[in-house]
Length: 321
Ligand code: SF4
Ligand code: MG
Image (tube, helix red, strand yellow):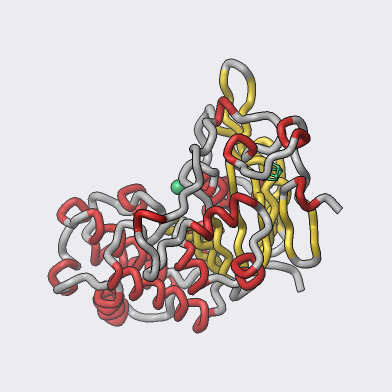
C-alpha cells in the first residue's frame, strides 16, 4: 500500500556568505495511515525544520528547501502552487506548533476560532459546533470553558493558548497531524490527557501523527516507529520496539541511557558529553564523532551512509556490512 506521506532526500539549507549549510540533510521517511511516527533528537537537530519543510512553511530567505521530494497521497507537495498547498494545510494536514501565538488569530475570540474550525471540517450546525468547541476546551483541560470561549488569545496564559491550539488542530480531524513538542510546556496531568486525545484521534479517524519530541517516555507510549535525528541528519530509523530494545547508533544508546529512572540516583544520570554542533561548524565525516566514545579514524573523514539492516536503518560506520 502506498504510504500517506513519503519524504525523500529532503534537504533544507541556510544560505550564508560561505555558501549553503544544510540544517536538514537528505532526510527520508514514510508514514502510513494510522501510524504514529516520532521524530526525536536534542534541540537544534532539525526536527522542527523538517516539519516546517513538509508543510512548506519555510518561505523566507535565507532558509530554502534545496533538494528532495515530499509525496502526499502520491503528489509532490513541493510542486504544488500556493493555493493547492493552502488546501492541503487546511484540509489534510494540521500542525500543532511549538509557539502557539503563530497559529491563533489575535483579533478573534477563542470560541469563534474553534467553532469555525469545527464548522469547516465537521458536518454539524452552528449550535452543535459551539457545544463541541466547549467540549473540546474541556477535553484539553481548560477550566470554565464557557467563559473562556469569549476571551481573546492574549487573555490566556501560554499553556492555555497551547491547549486551545491543540483543540483546534484536533477539531480539524486531519488525515495527518504534525505535533511539534505539543506537551513540553504543560504539566503532567494535562500532558497525559492530550496524549490520550491524540491516541483517540488516531483510533477514531485513522489519523497519522508525526510526533516531534525529546521525551523518550512519550515515544515509547505513543509511537510505532521512530526517526532519530542528529545535527540535521537521520541517524537511526526503525520500529520503536526494535530501537528501544536494541539501539545501534551510539547517539541513540546515549539518549536512551539518559532517561531518568525512578530507581536511579538523579546525580548518576547519564548525559551525552558535549553539544550539538553549530550549523556553520559541522564536523567533517560523521557529525557525531566529537562526542562519540566509539569513533574511529574513518569517522572523522567520511560521512557514513544510512546502512540498512533488515527493518532497521543506522548511519554509523560500526554497521558497515
Ligand atoms: Fe561514532 Fe563513528 Fe559511528 Fe559516528 S560513525 S557514531 S563517530 S562510531
Ligand atoms: Mg524545535
